[in-house]
Image 1 (tube, rainbow, N blue to C red):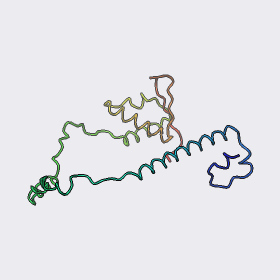
Image 2: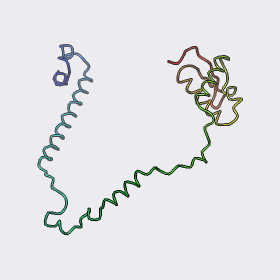
Image 3: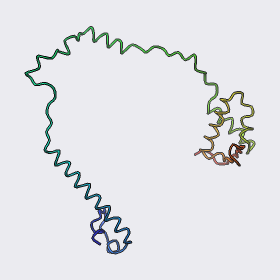
Image 4: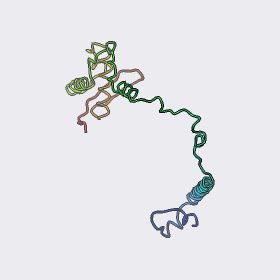
Length: 175
């Protein structure tokens, strides 16, 4: 009962809360409260230790200021203007001639696969990619199939590992 009364609550506990419950739950709450008390003691110790420490200014004292060079001595308006011009100059154009152009999109593949499945109602993945001219088209159609699966528009079955994937069109619309 003592543990139940000490447990923090948003509402006032009734008699059943104080008396009822399992002994295991009361023991777990007691352990939890003990951990919180220990954490509170540790935080209080840290705060007390921190109150005895004082920061000090860094760098040399005023009497040594004349020994260090002035960092702003060599800064000029022309130098700042050159730096600003360099920063504001547009970056050089990036040569993208080595990157293959995008010839097929997931949206196009999504429309194609959805259209074929809406008509046929069921097909294998092999049938859906039979007319794919390049491997990238196979990959994009697979991604389109995953999108349809995620939206709940198709169901997928595969009897064994690396086996044929059977795709069935579902009546549900995306939502």
